[in-house]
Structure formats: structure tokens, C-alpha cells
Length: 279
Image (cartoon, one colour):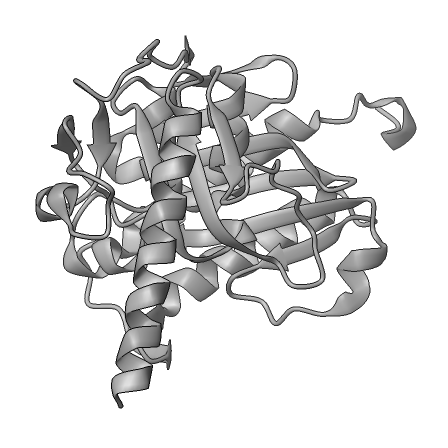
């Protein structure tokens, strides 16, 4: 059949198939003694990350040569800023769990158009999970439609957080809900909300776009809400591709979660100022 008469694979199909294949590639390195090093203190990378990154770039840009590229394991450049469509990728999100032989890692693939994520695929092969989402068409995991829990109070809210941090002094009061499993992958933590395994998640540290691009769409298409610390929608493919705080939750909890995150960040900032003054 002539090339021009073939039906082009959809962006969603391309993302899902690429993420699945990349996940299987990463899985082949899982539990093996791969070579690892720190690209920055406390920020490990290994041969598996680089192999998956190269595969995804070849697969995605090979199919969409006019698109831009932003990945944790590829040196960034300003060319992507001039592109309307940009693939935002984390080859192995949750590298520490990968290195330790734990299942809390995933391959994250997202397509951003004019700053908004429109397609997402998140493969967690060690867990046997493959999430997918298309803007305006919902999200699913292994063919099952996803929907967030209707939780509207903290009484029984579930958070993917270390249990001791539920009562940390920087919160306005201890969390009354339950701590649930916390994968190292930030994307999987947010996906747990979409699959009704958790109700709220927040992060006060600086977070890269590739950490949350795919999971943000998966969650919002499941009916959840995710914003930055100030409550603004997440915009992607920025010159500095980071967020300074993220709040994600069911609709009934999001405002409360954002308020508690803001309180915690202000409290921690005040402590740092006090320590600096004492020094």
C-alpha cells in the first residue's frame, strides 16, 4: 500500500505502544546489576534510563519528526519552545525504586500541545499496569475506566506519604486520614488518585515537568484536580520546565489540600529564615 494512503497511527496509540515497549525494555534491566552513577548529588541515572530515553526519542520523533522533545535524560535546548507539539518524557520515573528492586517506577510519556497535555501513557511493568489518557475522552488503566473517589473530608482520606509525616510539625494539624503505599515515582503517586487508591497528594519541592506531565492528564481525566501551589492550572513546555509545589486531590479535597500545602511551605520557609538568622 502506498505510504500516502496508509492511515496514520493516532497520537494516543503511538504513546501507549511506545510506553509499553519502553517499559518492557526497562524491565529487562530490572534486578540486573546495571551501571549507575549520580548525574548530580542524590540524582542517580543508569544505562537503563539512557537506553529507554534513546528508544523513546527514536520511536516518537521518528513517527512525528516535526515535534519537540523534553526529557529528563536528554540535554535541553530552546528549540522546543518554538514547537506547538512537544513530547515530555521521563524514561524511568522513580529510579531509586528501580535500583532497589522495588516496583514503584514507571515510564512516563506525554504529548503537550500549546502548553497543555493532550495525550498520556504511563507504563509500570513491574506492577503490570499501563495507564492511558486522551484529553476530553477520559483515562483508563489496562482497559478499565478510571474515576477518582468522591472523598470530600479528611476523616478517611488516603495519602501516598510516609506515615511519620502525617503528623509532621509543619502541617497546621496532623492528617486524620491514612498513609498508603508511596512509590518513588511521583507519576505513580498521582496515578493512585486516578485509580481510587488514594485521595490526595501534594509536593512542595521543585518538580520537573516530565515528572508529572502524563499523570496530570490521567488524574484530571479521571475527575481529579491538580494545580500548582497557588491553585493555577499546570502549564507545560515552559522555558524553565519546573513547578514550585503541586496539589492534587479529589474535587472535594483539593482546596483543603492546597491550603495545607501552602501552610507547610510557609512554615518551613519561616524555620529556614530563623536558622539563617541564628547562624
